[in-house]
Length: 209
Ligand code: B12
Figure 1 (cartoon, rainbow, N blue to C red):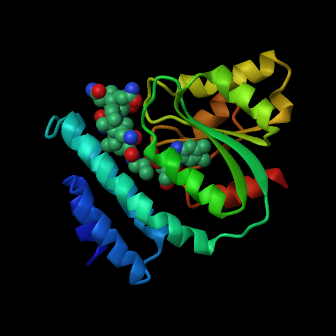
Figure 2 (figure 1 turned 60 degrees about the horizontal axis):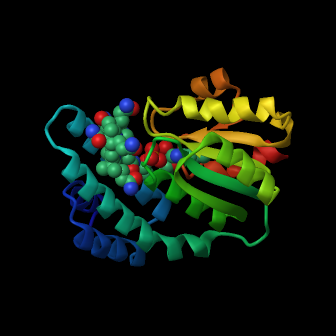
């Protein structure tokens, strides 16, 4: 079983076969983080095919479900790699209007296995809810995911609310999701942009120093 074969199963939305393939790869010692990177590229390709009208929403939904099945299989393998000491508290969610949660779920998994405590707010989360939940948790970090150009402004809204409430210095705000960038992070005054889940724990640890 190869990564290419797994990628094809995810792209074709074959959830059960993809799950089995992932199991095989993982038990053969394949690095779960490498698998995630490969699957992220696969999903970008799925998205491009959708944008070109070669496939439609049901196919994306099936591919998304197949990827979620693969991520499920990865969880125990990631846990082995992680430490146990709490490095920071994070509230994490997908911004209002956005239902794309797979990337956020992967980030959650990787943060938890690397010693961060995570409160998962889910998807379609109002900007004010991020702030209220961060206050309730006594969080160090607010992490906001956006997968659409139309919902990226909701990341800025979180920062605007923090400023209005006089809380901007209390939290580090980190952003991610396929259409976001370092440039966007700078523009909205976020503390950090993370391009992928693999780099996130180290980038945050560096930021909190
Ligand atoms: C799967 C998918 C769906 C699934 C989502 C299933 C689910 N449960 O999440 C479904 C079918 C529901 C869906 C719906 C829609 N989708 Co869609 N979807 C995708 C697709 C193909 C893949 C997304 C994905 O899971 N990627 C894999 C993950 C692992 O990657 P990732 O999310 O980028 O996350 C990684 C990093 O970015 C980072 N990261 C992510 N978030 C964060 C947060 C923090 C804090 C940090 C540190 C890091 C981090 O870590 C992750 C792991 O490394 C993308 C294409 C793409 N290029 O992404 C389109 C895409 C995002 N969708 C798109 C569209 C248009 C839609 C719909 C509007 C379609 C429609 N007509 O209804 C709806 C919108 C629904 C809504 N309101 O949100 C467009 C958006 C275009 C735009 N305006 O920007 C895209 C880009 C496809 C395209 N090319 O047209 N979609």
